[in-house]
Image (tube, rainbow, N blue to C red; front, side, top):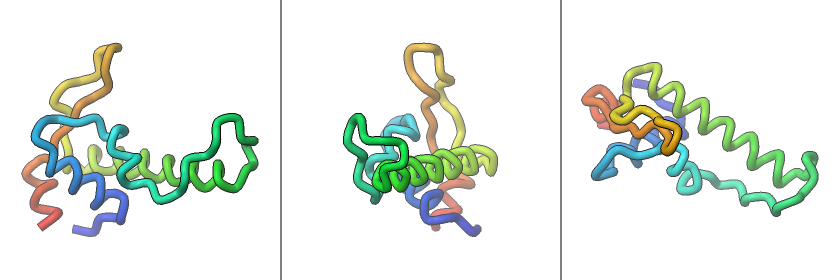
Length: 95
């Protein structure tokens, strides 16, 4: 199965987790762009690069869910986000 770099890395981290995780909590482990300084202008190249990378990770997380490679174990409830785990198909995609 073809996975993008971001999809593969997210799925790898989710699969290694010992309990369901918030996919967004994994983004800092994958992000290569430095985080922009607080208050930096919207057109700051560091901010632009970081934002684009975050959006790509959001797309990757949605793609994993749509392809049923991860499943929501605990839906968001207003106090915490969705918590997910890898499906059997997700683990097989990594193999």
